[in-house]
Image (tube, rainbow, N blue to C red; front, side):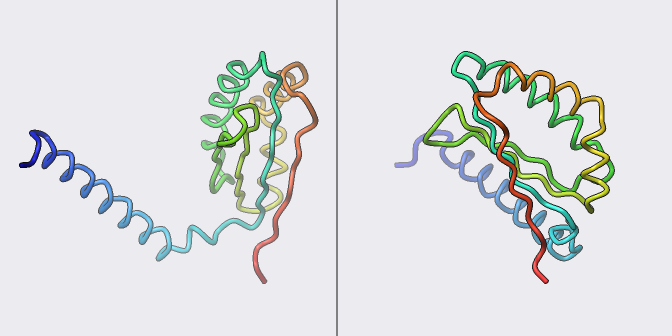
Length: 131
């Protein structure tokens, strides 16, 4: 016998899946997934007592960064096996958009914050699109 609410939860999950599949298909059809001319992955190692401060600062930075005209994708993740390691995946229209990003007030602000909360330098790997 089906538990009460199970049918509703199943319908909601199916609706979310249908929406996500449609959105992804639209992105692929429009070519937006291939619109980044400059990409990077940045890894941040946070001091144990500064995790909450990092998360708060990064949330503010993410919100501002996503509003920049040359930002295609700006995502932050926490490493599953180490809660003090965070990884950003950043896609920009081109290198000029990334350079402009570095000059924004929110990046300057978080850079100052990083001086006291990161355990080591940011590890940045830049990526080139496939030829």
